[in-house]
Image (cartoon, rainbow, N blue to C red):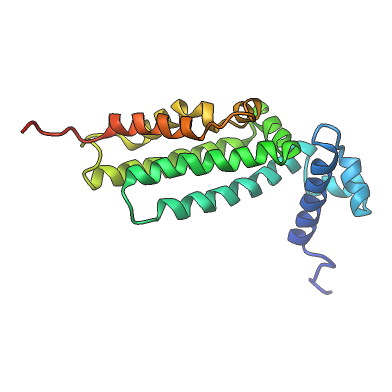
Length: 204
């Protein structure tokens, strides 16, 4: 008996995700049903459910793919050999630009991510945790370089920074103020926070 399958699971999953993403882009997440995705692939809804328990599970997997894309961009930035303060500012600005691109030029994709945030999907939670970890690593490097005060707790600082930057990073807020340029606001907030982290200067 041959152990080979006519089509690998990975390829089938990839086809389902590609078809679903196309449907979400074309008609929107809310208006797309699993039956629509199945029809686009020429298969039955039951076959889709062999790989994904629900439309939400499909959406979560698509979100994971997009989050992996932005994580790659941000990790490359954090690896640069430059002051931690500069990298933190660039991190926030680049994340803002990426989220704005998704919210403005790909509004239906933004609606898909927004649905995930409202439903607290695990993919969104992992995305936020990854952002915290990357910023915490930058803060730790800043402490090691002597840029930031000794004793600064990196993860606390990372979470505080993300909370303070919610207005320029959260997709829903960016979408609401799409007509405004929030990039200078992003830089201003980060610079105030960096100043709070900075190593105190000794009196002359």
